[in-house]
Length: 354
Figure 1 (cartoon, one colour):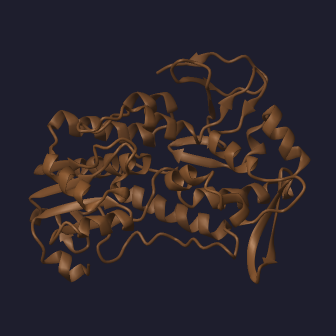
Figure 2: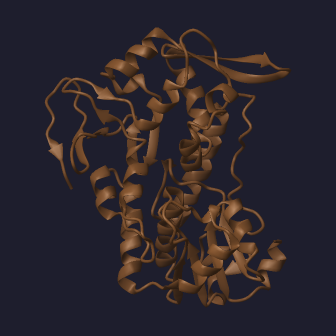
């Protein structure tokens, strides 16, 4: 859909995350769609629309600069025909807000969908949009917007409804919490779409999967995602992308976090000159690709946990430092509800429930 086509379309605009999801919506008929390729599941976020755009563009440029030369990923184009670009009373350069009577936001309990929906609602609220905001999405458990059939999309649109003022406030508050520094506040603010049969447990699980876990009083355990990635490596042999991802065991990680699944391995290889993971570019089957091997120190890290945050590549999730220079949090898997601990190396820690 060209910018000219979008500009001349109706006053009802559909907002969605991801090109695949946008393609699904195009099959609904002649509707105006604005979409973003940006997956907010990791990296910094901000509540101000202008600041958010600035830090996301800087984040992706920094990310791509660290990727191996063989990477198939590229910088997401956050601007361009059909893209969402909130700012200066506009949804996009071609779409002034005063010409829009209703916005339909597509979301679900798939973590990237939820974050997109919360961001879009918070952004519209901050821009002073006071017309109708509808929320639409799949009611089927575990289904993302991008995975809907056309029949499911039609059903989702028919049951969508305008959000009440209190619901707009709730979603905006959830996004503000995600931009903050407190994982307990993020979990407390999560909300499932009104039509969904799923609870917020899927959202909680997806958020926690990037945060380190409590091992004992002295050590942290790697996050679920980091542990899953490193567990696919071998001490005896170097493994490439097909060996690591080819059998589908990491499909959930790839579906949820996109390029993070692949690029994080390269960051592990760059950490401490390959102390835990050795990585290099090799020719395999006529193609140059990144290959990895787990070192003995990496095995010990998986089995015994870590004592220093610097033993893990830095990772920011919204406003939270999963691993980094800011306040690091860990969570206890064994607790019946999410229980968080501030990380103070070699000191006893008190649980933090907020």
